Length: 339
Image (cartoon, rainbow, N blue to C red; front, side, top):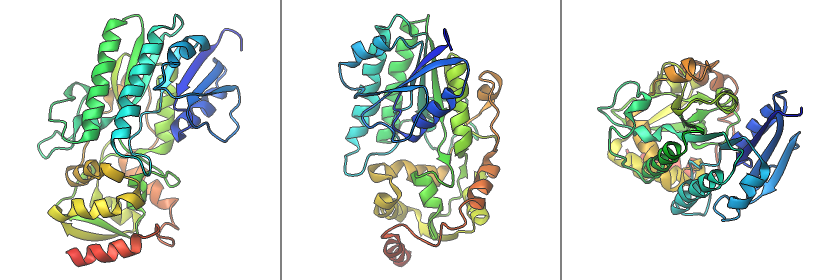
């Protein structure tokens, strides 16, 4: 299609970047998709040009303008450290990498829209927090963990970038954690354990985005972005205890002072690494966000509400307890002795 949209995806090597490219390739409004990452996807992506590059590199200042893209979508913000790498590496990729990418966008005469796939961690997880945070409530509570502080720093830079460039439509998507039967992320692995450790005396309300809705929201924001922050979350919430009953998992209550060390021991198997502190707070206090702006301004209504996302996960994960993650059985046995 001549004269259609040219969309540049930073982080195309991850699941969300790859899924976005696949969806955009089928959209007749899109002329071309260009993807950048250090590790490129090993799947066939139609109408997609792949460029192997690190967004932290100064070469981005020349590469981004050369693509002649009108839309930049950054899906490469990492929520969990890569195996064997310190949590500090997340800061380099998430904050330094985003800064380099925004600096490159400044030099591009064709960029009109910038969309970042961020995190609702900006709100924190607090016992005194509201049932549902609106977009205006960011930083209402202290940013207590390293990842929350990184998200806060990243959002600060992005807000300054948007103010300096009012001609650009800049949109920050604040995603709640995702869930899906085939999704290899810590929360899905946690809920797939044969015995699930929980914090004694706490039953957090959770809002987990179904993986299909997570992708569709990103597509909608790419094609029809709005200015400012937008919460990406299902409607409603579900308690952890109810979610585990739906899934059919067995709870292992652990006194909450011991839950952090217990989750740290599970961290490598779950993929949380050094960020288990964020999971501890989420699984103690929960977090809900208001999705009104997503539905009304962005124009996207999720197919699954919070309860339905868990039900679909349970329905398509019937084999999850047949093959526990490597090493988890021994860890769970040790956790049982900690009670």
